[in-house]
Image (tube, rainbow, N blue to C red; front, side, top):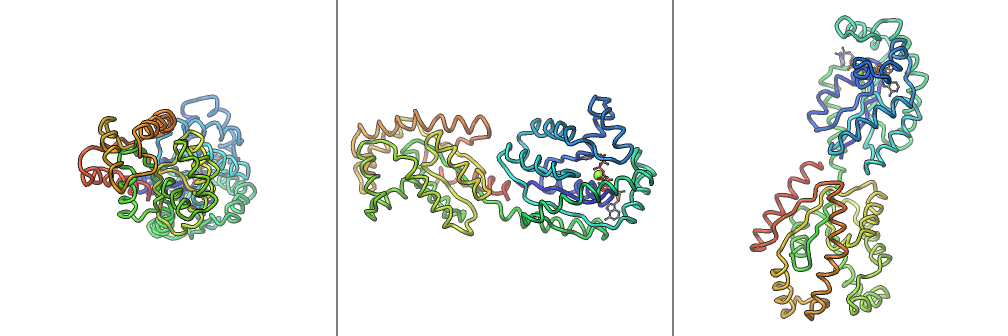
Length: 389
Ligand code: AP5
Ligand code: MG
């Protein structure tokens, strides 16, 4: 997701720049000014409450702003990013925005501060006033809006400066020059977006070998908890010994162990372009853990893919593998194979269900040759990377 806020005094060009940016970056546009004008036109209670304040150039209450924003955001859960124009405008609203982003399981990338001197605000808005029909585009009200801006809105900048999220831009230049600067900043933000894929599938669906190949092809970090655990066994570490005991009983390894390993991996992979998670999350608890682990770094899940293979084919594949060198400790007997399939059925299928309730889960046909499946998955990953960056 790319979430940005356009900031600046009246007439700085927030609305003008937004028009281009929402199209170019496919963002959902939220202008509190526009929303309030719409409420006024509709003659709603909110609109009537706001009318007098807007006409005088004051700021409407934070309560009204929360109501109109909340209404808009929850009506559009599928948006791939938000562009806020004229919000946040008070210190309180900066916290409100934080809260809204958390609710949507995302965060604000940055705030773009368009700077212009007062006299330019006035001259631009007076000119706009000739045709805009806006009740607040006259000199007395413009001066009031500017006073409100200096008193209540400007202090909001510190909130973002302290977090290193504020970009100052000279807004006195042409529309195109200002636009080019903003685009450059947003492209840099997009590059920072990681592509994080969760790959599901029954044991034997090919998710392991496919995940590894996908990671290699797209330069992503492969996080397979099974492999990480095996590595600990090989190293004969304390964790490894504990894991062996759990494997032998056919049960899942306790979350504490897995979490520690993933945490370490995420911390050590500075500069990664994204992650492919395979074999995690396997339970609902783990899916919450993954959200938390990613959030700690300001990341989230970009895409969820479920590789689908008919059950009989799965059993055939797992049985075939049990006769080869690639045999896993847990597919040495039919009873264990069945137990693994059952674990997936009872514990992991609900996790996929949870993702399905909140977002799209792409199902990919896992039958056919490795190459065929790889092709199908690659297309999905490419599309995902394209929308993430
Ligand atoms: P709002 O609608 O947000 O108005 P504003 O902040 O005063 O900003 P403007 O829309 O006037 O300016 P803009 O920066 O969008 O400039 P534009 O691109 O149009 O809010 C209105 C009122 O609603 C507030 O006063 C308040 O009462 C209330 N409100 C809204 N949000 C609120 C909130 N969060 N909390 C509380 N109250 C809230 O450009 C202006 C003109 O300049 C245009 O004619 C344009 O063509 C021209 N122009 C733009 N860029 C350039 C350029 N680079 N060169 C030359 N001309 C340019
Ligand atoms: Mg505007």
